[in-house]
Amino acid sequence: MLENNTRSRTCPECGASFSCSANQYCWCMEIPAVLAFDPSPTADACYCRPCLSKRVAAQLEHEIANRPHAEMLAKATLYRERSPTKQSLLANIDYHPESQQLSAWYHLKRGYCCGSGCENCPYPENENSAKWGQSGS
Image 1: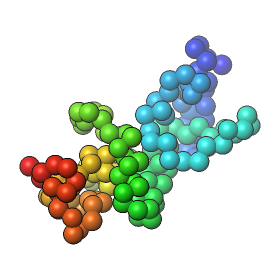
Image 2: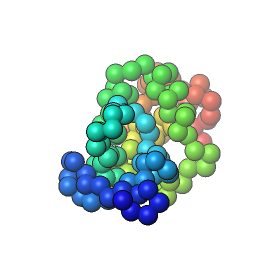
Image 3: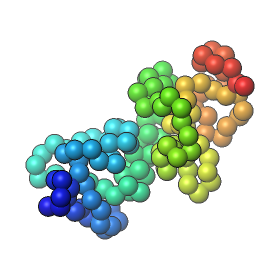
Image 4: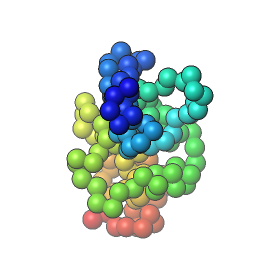
C-alpha cells in the first residue's frame, strides 16, 4: 500500500502500472459511471486511464445507438458541466483523440443540437436546435 490508501495497480488490459485511490477521490471518478461494477472483494477491475476511457466510450456508443434518445439525454445531463473547456474534455469519451472530433456523448452533455451538421451528432435529424432549448448560434 502506498500513502493515503493509494494502491499500486496493473491494468489488466495493457499491463501499465498506475495508482488507484478508489476508496477516496480517484481520477476514475471523473469518468461516466456506465460500466457494470463488481463489488466483490476479489474483483481487481481497475484499468489505467486510457483503457478505462476506451471501455467507457465503447459502452456509451453502444447505449447511444440502442437506447431511446430521451433516456441518453437525461443520463448525459448528470455529467454536464456549467462551463466546459477543452481542458475538461475526456479523451475517447468527449472527443476522439485521432480526429479531434467531439463525440456523440459530448453533444448529449451539451444538451442541444447546434445545427452545424456535426458528424457525431446524436440528435434526431428531423429535430431543430430550438426544440432542444437553445439556438444554434
